[in-house]
Image 1 (cartoon, rainbow, N blue to C red):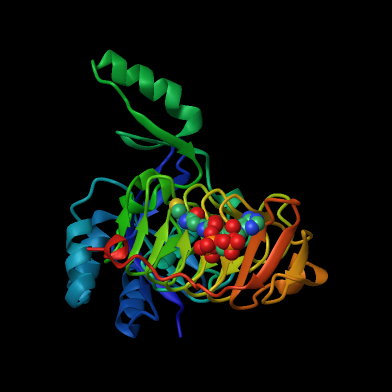
Image 2 (tube, rainbow, N blue to C red):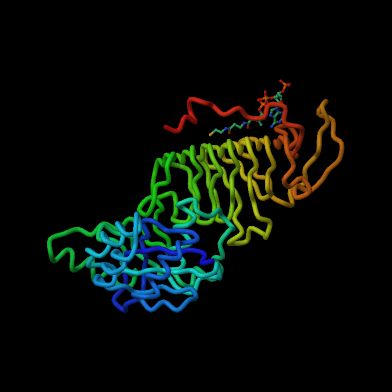
Length: 338
Ligand SMILES: CC(C)(COP(=O)(O)OP(=O)(O)OC[C@H]1O[C@@H](n2cnc3c(N)ncnc32)[C@H](O)[C@@H]1OP(=O)(O)O)[C@@H](O)C(=O)NCCC(=O)NCCS
């Protein structure tokens, strides 16, 4: 069965290379009728391919299709911008920019979860792009476009220069709030009931399972469980640069305090004291119920365990871990997402 398919409209640079593609309704396991139409009209012969589509071909496709996809094809057929149909027969590592964009949008549409799709080698397929009030512009072509805009008496606003656009310009999944849309990159997976405050950040291939208050940073690859909170300015360690190779995650109903951080996966109902960064190699003194030391371990030995409270003893500076008696109760009013 074919893995995914999507009809899209995108932007190419002056050399004709794709900068980005917007897929309004990406699909997993597309209907055979869609593939048959792609075979007939675009001569699709199988494999993973981004097939350029003319307006006429898009109109023909719309005649062959039914329902949502027919309506979408009819709308896209009116576009003067470059059209494309991307077919992923298999979830192999991406081979083109439209394929990367399809996978990022499958994630942000919640059709797949982080780590469920192959993204190997994606950076090399993404061109450094200026995201502007005139849309996507190859960073190398920006100066010329700025000058042209000025000559026309216009001002070209540059929002970001990055390989990734902001998620909200492609999809806003239901039941989320985002204080500053620039802080959530395309490819983020935001579960229903998630609030990302202005200080929060969510990278691609990372996100939240469900109700969460995110005021800290969710690095690439990190997944946060249902009902967990990331306090203001806290950090979850990514694996992209020098962060080691342990995949970081947060279980259910856990709290990473303000300005704290984790370099190990946390289990359910854990708390990390505000300001404490627990790295994998941090030596941690385990305390019993009477706060007496039992033994010293490295934090990585506690990875993924439930009901732990990490704190830095304010009298002697050592990092301590004890059973978390007061697993967090989410502030219901604060978390009411709607
Ligand atoms: C770690 C934390 C959870 C502890 O809170 P708590 O469980 O309510 O504990 P308390 O503050 O009531 O302290 C219990 C006892 O431990 C002591 N204690 C607390 N933190 C300590 C520390 N770092 N070092 C030494 N003793 C400490 C307290 O003094 C108190 O002692 P007592 O029994 O003699 O009175 C809390 O300090 C914290 O950091 N919460 C994070 C909140 C946050 O950042 N939210 C996000 C906002 S954006």
